[in-house]
Image 1 (cartoon, helix red, strand yellow):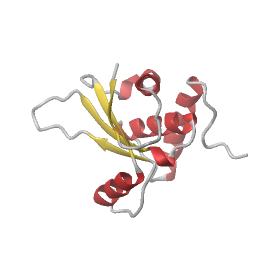
Image 2 (cartoon, rainbow, N blue to C red):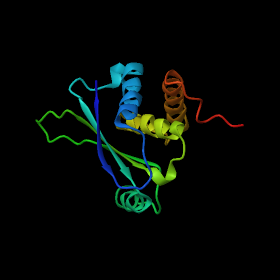
Image 3 (spheres, one colour):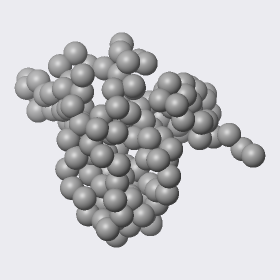
Image 4 (cartoon, rainbow, N blue to C red):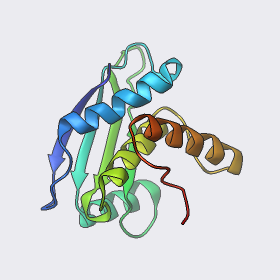
Length: 146
C-alpha cells in the first residue's frame, strides 16, 4: 500500500479527507499493481491555491496560469532507494466536485507512474485507465460528454 500524506492545505476551500485520497490512490495500485515500484510506500499530496499553482506551473512547466494538478515524480539520489513515489499539487480553487478530486488524484498518480497524454495513443491509454479506476470507485466517466 502507498500511504498518502497530505502535505499542506494552502486554501480556504475544504478538500476531501485523507481517507478519501487514500481510497483513490489504493484503487490505482489495485488496478495496475505491476506499475507500482516495489519499494514505493508513500505519496505526498499538497492542496494549494491558484497563486501557488500558477507559480509552480510557471517554474516547472514554463506555462502561464494556474492548473488543476501538477505531478512531481521523486528523483532518487543515485544508489539510495526511496519509498516516495512523488508529490501531487492539486489546486482546490479549480476543483468543484468529488469526482474532480478523485479524477485529478488518479490522473496525477498515473503521471507519477510514467503515463502521459502528449501523444494521442498515450492519451487514450491513460484515459481508459482513469475511466476504469474511477468506475471501480463508483464515479462516472469524467470524459463523457452530454
